[in-house]
Amino acid sequence: MNRKDEVLEALRLGEPDTVPATVLDGGAWTVQASGTDFESLIGHPEEMARVNIETARRMGFPIVYLGSGCNNYPVAALGGTIKFNGVGPPDVEKLLIEDTDEIEHFNVDDLAKDELINTVWEATRIVASEMGEEVVVTATSWGPFTLATQMYGLENMMRSIVKRPKDAKKVIEFATRVIARFYQPLLEENLIPLATIADMAASGDLVSRQHFAEFALPYLQMLIADTRSKGAQTLLHICGDTYDKLDLLADTGAGCISIDHKVDIGGAKEILRGRSCLAGNVDPVRVLLQGTPADVEAACRDCLAEGAAGGGFILMPGCDIPPSVPEENLRVFLRTVESYPQGEPRRDRAQRTPESDILDN
Image (cartoon, rainbow, N blue to C red; front, side, top):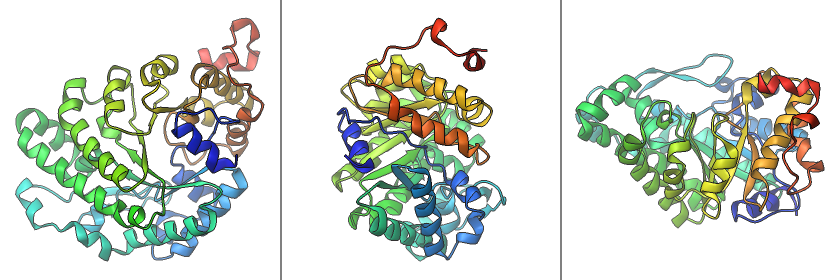
């Protein structure tokens, strides 16, 4: 199996010869490691493609995430304003929607006229043409609830789901249509076998199980069903502690559920077994950014011991990685799976190295 086949086998809930290991998104890290920035890539799809291709080949990434870090581009494409920060992804500077009555004046097809969006689309075409046989090429987007908060404002959305639920749902439904339009050419041209959705604002740290079921789940189901109807699977990541709603995440229909480092990976494996591939969940800050290579290896082996047995598992960080993660740590993260025997029991305290004790403090 090549790297692409290993990922696809895990997505089929199978047990590939080697457990796939990859970053989640990683756009900011890729851009910084390449010595460029997001703003400089706009209007230059060949350069965006080159940055991703060269980094993926140098590091051995089995999944290449086009548009990672560009998730706010649809807000700008429809009339909002984004601010480029030099380091890291651009932020929304001016909200798109202040009154939900404005939604009827927007046309989701305007995405096709936008330079930012077209740069991501064309870069995806280039990467799929050059690397599509060796790696899984995907494109990333916010989930419906999160894109809605970026368009309408997080405070407005949180207030609306309690006081004006119809307004909240109107914005979320519009965001769902925007995301589907973003993916439309990539799916219809068979460029990506996997769509990556990050619905960070639907986090267990922000949204209750009840509100998730009402305001996030139905729209994720619509989006993922549309993606599946076009022949692709979905990788869904939601930040924070989502343990109390993992069954609902499986109900979205996503082929792979990526969990935050706050979630118990062993428990998640049991809940998702037979329903969705599990991905996770090495701490991207405390381990990958701040830890030693020995810490990284220990954390990876613990995740593998909890999640890899029986297949249907991809080793990932628990969220997107900071752009300043040391390359050495990332290489250890990617390499650990190569020497890991499937089904190895979790190491107890006596087997741990002194350097890895930091992970328990």
